[in-house]
Image (cartoon, rainbow, N blue to C red; front, side):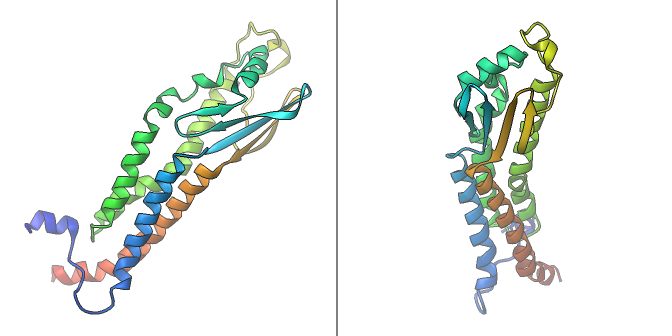
Amino acid sequence: MNTKLQSFFGPRVPSKGARWPYRLPSLLFTAAALCLIASMFVPYWNMTLNAPQYPKGLTVWVSVNSMEGDVAEIDGLNHYIGMRPLGEAAQLERRFSVLAISALALLVLAAVFVHTKWAAVLAIPSATVPPVFLLDMYLWMRHFGMNLDPTAALSSSIKPFVPPILGTGMIAQFSTTARADWGLYLATAASILILTGLYFHRKAYKPLVEKSAE
């Protein structure tokens, strides 16, 4: 192996002695990648709108590439206050999210074979999926709530607002309750597994790297 490749992949695992310290980071990274992949098949977030004419509430479920539930009914109510249809939000994100998360999961798996600090460069981007998702949701909700159509029927009675991305908020006589869903929980678990894996990765391989540099 040439010097550049060796400096990237790092030293080999010793053939003698305990193997578990070197296997643990690999298992954690692999579990994190599986959590990320699984997260794409379930909703990341849901919101229930409670309105007087809908005693059971209206709920929308948001996955990384789709939006399901009572979307049309919520859009109908939002139309009266001048809010744009929900489907107009995050169109670019929904189009490329599966590809992006799949690529991140592959990078985490690639970190299994890297025994240097470059493993962190490969794995850390995947740990940012939960905060990036919530930040993107917040920015879109803020954009929609702060840019109401002034010609809407009830525009004069509704001031611009920012719907909460987590928790309960009030909009005139309506209330909304936003919650994290299984996809976000899985992505968060992946982040924890990655950070834990990097800790044990450094603990296991740093001495080997330092020894090989002598």
